[in-house]
Image (cartoon, rainbow, N blue to C red; front, top):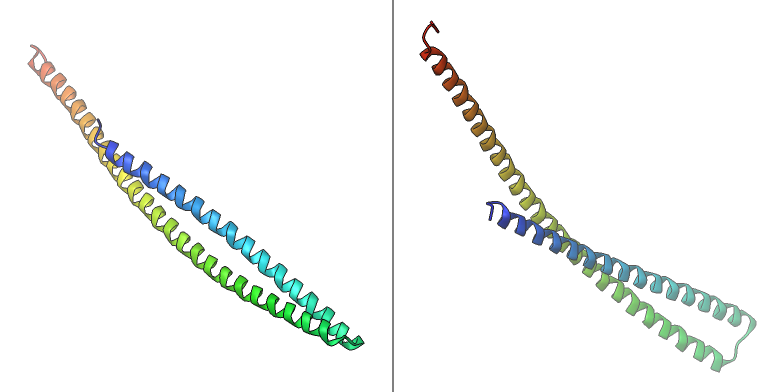
Length: 152
């Protein structure tokens, strides 16, 4: 088992957690988009229905139809209020999911930094070892040459 394997394990787990948080964020963003589209549809429908009522009132409308239409508009208004509330809640979920993803990304960056530092240290150690080995070979060769008769 090499010295970096626990760090590699942590890095892999952090990446998996980040990816999972990213998927969760994407799902929440999709739900937010759906809720926003539903809200826009309700607003459009409410505006269209109010325009129809306004036109009917200009042309004259019986009290029962007026009452039913006003009740229907009130139910649309309640549906709009619910949709606004749902959108606000979903936006909070998206913000929370974004914060979670950012935390996981920071963790991955921290482990990446540690892994890079560890790799740099290992590279320096290997380079020093290689330099020492080379120096030892050169010194040995010089000593052998000096030890040979007639080398002076």
